[in-house]
Every structure is written in structure tokens, then in C-alpha cells.
Length: 175
Image (cartoon, rainbow, N blue to C red; front, side, top):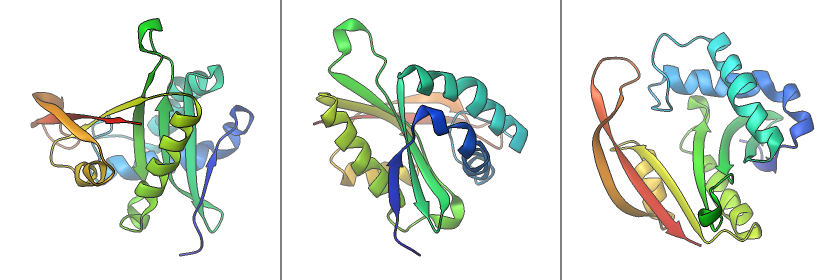
């Protein structure tokens, strides 16, 4: 794999990467990723999600979007939520850590999270929170990065491909 480059996406460039972002999200959902969607989930559904739900928040400054590129292709992405209530401006939340299934197990998620934490520190955030489906491959990654488990909630979300209800694990890290 060519060198990995992680960059913060400027709001003005969102439309130019829409198809790449949609492809990563779509592939993640088809591979069983628990990222808020259930099958059937089309590429058009993925484009609509980015265009209608994420881009407006990113453009308003409420979220930071990072992308990981290899060979000029976007292979991963993650978001950091900054739009918090007044009594919680010291914290932020991780959202949608996605690595295209064809590029997993290459350190991309770890690199994205490390850069995300750097951005949180630069914005004077001292606490970062996240949640993940209990037992997912991301859970050991977060633990290895120093995140602590707060607890789990049973039957939190429906599985991507069936009616099974899955638990979610909440985690945090002091920065």
C-alpha cells in the first residue's frame, strides 16, 4: 500500500469527495458494519446521508471530517463532533470511523483516531467519548488506544442484516 495521508476536509471540498465517502459507507454497511443503517442500503442512500445529514453539520463547523487516502483513493474516514451544550464544551465525540473493507487491518483506523485526537487537543478538548457495537472489531482498537469502558446497554440497536438486537459499549478517554 502506498503511504497513507490523513487530511482534514475543508467544507468547500465536500462535494468533490461525495462519491468516495458514499462508497466507503455503503461498503461498510454491506460488510455488516453497525453504523446506524440496515439492509437494504443503496449507494444512493449513502450519498443522501452524506449530502443531507452530514455535509450541513460539517459546513456549520459542528463536525470535523478527516479522510485517509492511499494512491489518491479515500480508504477511510472519521468524524469528530464539537457541537456540545455550553456545560460540555470541554468534550467531543467520535463518529463514523469507517475503513473500506478492502483496506482493513492496515493501521488506517488507528492512524485516523490518532489524528482525530490531535485535533481534539488542538481545540482544547479534554474528554473524548464514543460508542461501538459490543464485540465489534473496533472495540479492541479503542482499548489499545487508551479508551476506557463506561458500560454497555443491551438491545441498543438492530443488527444490519437481521432483526437481532445488539448491545453497544460506551467508552471515553481523557486527553
